[in-house]
Length: 123
Image (cartoon, rainbow, N blue to C red; front, side, top):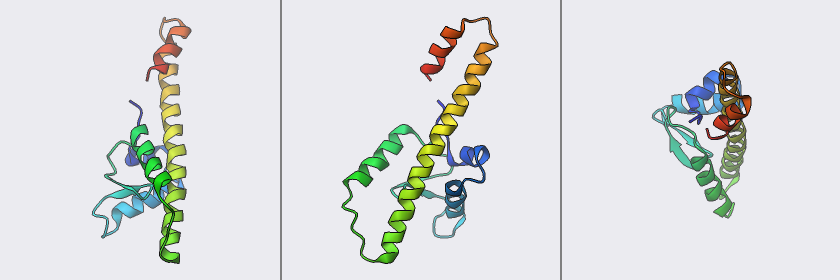
């Protein structure tokens, strides 16, 4: 429910390095408006960054032998790994923020706060 897209992350954290890099990628002529999540999955800026996609990228990275033909390829791999680490953290911060906002709104109701916490835990 609270999975962010790249464009939502741009609004949430416009100065984060990974966001500015991915947005720049979408504007380059070679990308045709797309970016590569963790260097592995081609994404549209409106696509949601779900936990399933994050796990899929993680699995691909874990199964990789890490071989690089040259220093340029190694630099690209390291950049993708850094971006992936940053986007995972940022997506989780976004989810936590949205859940906090929901909990704040729920606490304005006459519901018991214990019930509110249970409701948010299902999201």
